[in-house]
Amino acid sequence: MHRILVATNSSWLLAALLSMSLILSACGTSDGNSQGSQSTRPVETATTAPQPATATEPEASPTEPDVQADATRVEPDVSPEDRQALVEGLNRFAVELYRAAAAESDENLIFSPASISLAFSMVYAGARGDTEAQMAEVLGFLPQEEQHPAANALDQHLTALGTEPPPPGMEQGEPFQLNIANGIWGQQDFPFLDTLMETLFAHYGAELRQADFINAAEAARQEINDWVSERTEGRIPEAVPEGVLDEMTRLVLANAIYFNAAWLRPFDEAATADGSFTLLDGSQVTVPMMRQSGASIPYAEGDGYQAVVMPYTGSEVEMVLVLPAEGNFEQIEADMTEDFFEDARSSADTRSVTLTMPKFDFESRLALHEILPEMGMPAAFDADTADFSGIADPSDLYIGVALHQANITVDEKGTEAAAVTIIGVEATGAPEPAEITLDRPFLFAIVERETGAVLFMGRVVNPSS
Image (tube, rainbow, N blue to C red):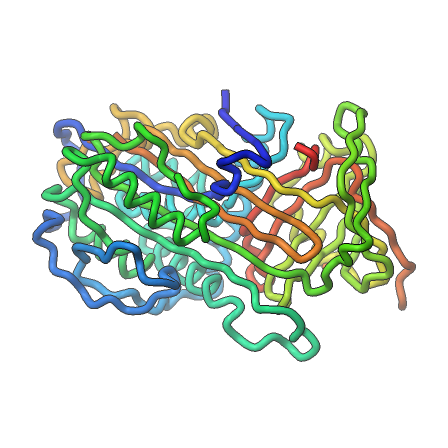
């Protein structure tokens, strides 16, 4: 049973983000095979490397890294084909994870495929054998020698968004904010392979910090939570719950994403009024409904749905809103493919649209350690079959827990969202005017324009919850 917790207006809602931390632990030794002879480096004796400014670290960390691999963040030399192949795999995984998570819940859903992909990509660097093959298949990863440069290229492309002047005519509003951060914490004295550490810093900008999980797991938990909270603007103050880290933890890898953007064409708050929203069971709830009349925005009609594309300031990122025809929500969900949102975007043409939609604010939590094995990736979560010998050799590291949180707030001004993942491992002639009223369950995705990468994805089945 997938554990999916959704809530709004609760004390911990502010912390709803998809952040992904990977906790790798060891208990004893095993005969994991590494690829070739590789040197190891106890954390406490690693040489500190220069600290270049990187896209993944927009601000100074609360605690400076104690150690660093002997590498620097590289400028990726990647073909457009490889980067797009990674995006296609990411979007395919996004739809499959959406379907798996939605199948076990009738609640709202929000998660960050980009955060999950980047976090697991770091762990993938240390995976071998069946563990590596299953991760590549389920997560849509490329072969090792192509995956990390491609992930680096996507990461740096995304974090550079909003830094260039907007196109003529798109200057209104403040620039949007998209922060992506990668971090790793390693058990002091543990013999991590140099090749792993070099890959994680060179392609992810992930700074290795010392931790003493054996004797001070709670202090390490607090430090990681502080790091995540700072990088998600306080929306996720407690990414790592109590009890997740213990004396068997050896490595924690974290990815945090924070997004805040104003609509290119904001809603007039005075036009917001209570309206009815019909739930899947036919009942109705009353919620605040925002309204724009005669807005000039992209609009599309597909097989059994209407869609609009709402650009954010700068027009580099946009929200695609899809309203299935009445009674067609489940069918749209069942038939959805990785090209679904891109098809809606590409078929849309700009016209005068009267748009009515609810404000919404909610959080989701996913137990990825329960969902991903069912999707075809059991080896990484099984102590008897996991092969992470690319992290340390010998190694019996396996992922024991993988928790994902995400939250989103959509109002008249724009959108704010965050995500974090915790993975624990033990030892688009003049068209007719259109109107769309999102007064029944609908889907949404926040998509980067150039690549089509899905940054956030979800559904709203009850905006009042």
